[in-house]
Length: 370
Image (cartoon, rainbow, N blue to C red):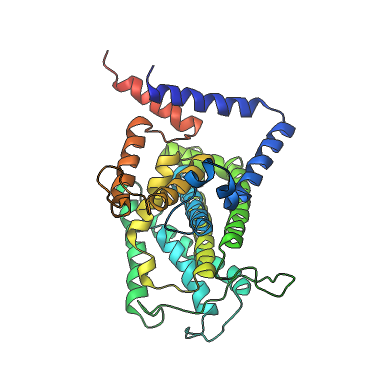
């Protein structure tokens, strides 16, 4: 029995066991997983195992926060790509819109001179990002496949070029002195400061949990069933009465909203953004995470988003034991090899949706030699 077959069966067994449990048992399991996620900043205190998990060359809580917004982006892109089947190569554009909207409303460098608090800017930034999703979705309603990918790619490049070349968005100079999320400790010190990223990670994790609940409910609703029909066969969905235009716009708007959340959190943590932050490779990396984790499955998107952030960070500061090279210089080469191996051994993703796994299984039977 091959290793890939063993992994498929173990994954299906775990998922089947969880599905057979009562609501109370599943609630307890989910609660324990959530508590474990909140305790991750302290994993280094576990003897032997902890130091092997923590990143080197980058602060562990900072690495966890980076992981949190990558997971957010993977969840948002999974709505567009995994649920609705719309190939989006410009997802970083929504991340950038959320961050720049926050900067324009809060930074003293902004031409608006509003200098709002971070929390006050959040709903406006998210609304602007959703509008951007609709603006992108509207002219692409009749496009699909490669043509849709090219248009979304152009959207991200337009955002980057506008950010680089206009005085309003300040190009490489960017926006500085962005405010952090509110909150103070009993001693008067700020909860969200610059020395400890743990509160930022907890905030990001809390937002992720809310997004997971929302995505899960959407997936099981009429909207989710409509997305499934569009993904499987858009023409057949139209014939059966599915309002494809409406639900494709829903997918772009909700995906943009989640991407904007990531941008808002990123701006609140960094305190500075510029046009070099939002490069095309960012979109490609997040898409790779969704596909690698399991397109169309929330758990797969979470795992894929976490891995694309964790693996390069974990390779920082590690020395090659044979040639004494710093693996940091080759971390993306190693990361690329890891992605290739996963895609060869698990083409449906590490945690695929049941439907996606069945589709690939049927396809393997079709192409198998008789």
